[in-house]
Image 1 (cartoon, one colour):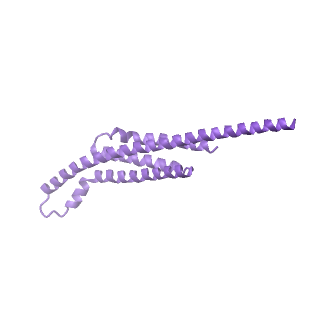
Image 2: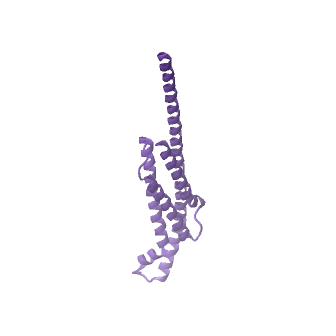
Image 3: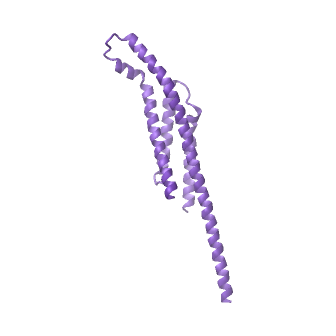
Length: 180
């Protein structure tokens, strides 16, 4: 009788161990899928940044050339306030440049946080604020680019914050679910 009960207990324990192993494997798959999802969102954000940088390079150069021509035409030589005039003329492009730089740094921070998560299987405690900061800086690039060009931002740039926020929220749900 005791042998039979012990056998049933052993079978139950093996079944429980297999169930836990399968559950941890599924959780691992969900985590890997979340990691892949956030990497895809970061790539999409980077693509949007690339589009903004292309616009910045082309249109800022054209605006710069036009501003310099106007300054040279309007200002006698030597022109004591040429630098100040140029800065005023290019203010919106300086804002785009600063926004691109800030967004680049925030995307790098998010990317490093994902690297740490993958390497150590532990999400950064401030992941939510890292993600939200990245999305906000990308929105700032979108707004600054639209203000500087007078045109809507590229579709990839406009969509990037929402895509990133959705991936961040999904990631948080998976991480919280994996640690229950």
